[in-house]
Length: 478
Image 1 (spheres, rainbow, N blue to C red):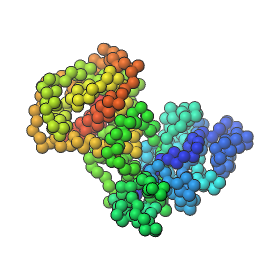
Image 2 (cartoon, one colour):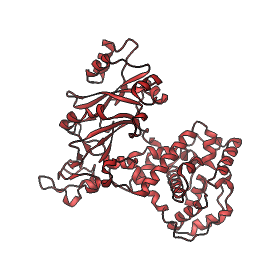
Image 3 (cartoon, one colour):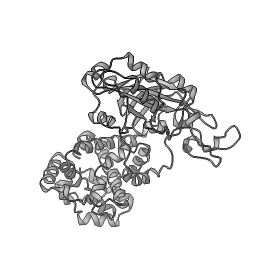
Image 4 (tube, one colour):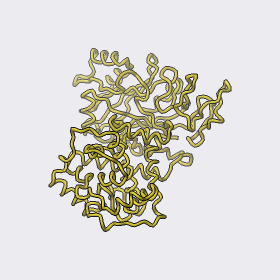
């Protein structure tokens, strides 16, 4: 089973990753001593850096990867790693892992650096890594990979925290209470069978990970053996401004995601254990659509008038009267189905049209809440499965016979190349980016409507893909 273990899911009381101050003269004794003493890090890495010759702009990073269950407890995703296991397993970071972005661990040619050394710090009871990031073409040629994004290297030099995640393959994990061994979350223990050695019934790992009993004991899984496969730079966690709206949908599941479910929620699994992997087809399709939409959103962000035009549909903000009347009298099921019926005609509502159709009383700050929300949802890793499960309400459209009223919608509502060009041109000429009052912060209703709109847009893209349209082509018509 393949798991994601996020760096920073233990509290080490300091930044998890920092650049080691190596000058053109190498790592001086005073700088090295000061740096590692400040971080209580292993001085073993000083010897490693003395032995190797760094390429031009090869960036050495000290990363505090994992803490032991004995000293730090389980991590926030309810995975525990005992001292003996980490002491034995940490060398696989060097022998097997590469530095990737978003766990793209299929091809070392896609790596952005390497793990030069790993160590178990006995004094601090934790695993530490020496990572060499490819900050230049010379470094990439030396390590065999790609040049890391300049903005990330600049952020590290500026002292900013970047999120990292580790991929590990484990043959099984074990319930901390009943010692049930499971090769996948599908065989995790249920509440009725999770009895500890004191004959106390516990929550069970299938639905109880992260829950804390009255006696203070928390439900988690222990990972006795494993092999680390990668260390990855991942997206920045969702901004706090939208967290409440996102968490509303995450609460639908009401459960903590363990490391295996977390990897699956992000679209990754171990090919060797595919027969044991829970891989809901619908969620996987929604996940692909969300990530691609977030990527397009990020690509458009440097050109705000294009982003405004492509999201705002300026010429299509009025909802046809017949459609609004239908929304007011239809059941929720039929309202969702009708939107997918429109999608069959390659029609997608604008954010403002959707708010009217769904009955949200939004403010002038609503467009501001929509912009960037795909990235927010894509970065809400822990909540990804329940968020995407919320898209399933759009899945019941195919068996319904509904009025389309598609002739009432202008070209700007169509998901076609021609309509996209029209939106971009009209948005650029009209200066739509100035229409939203940026001084007004989105309220809770604005954020809730923005999340709902993005879930609807994910369902549209997935629907078009199901109808033999290519997802990539669809999201380009953002």
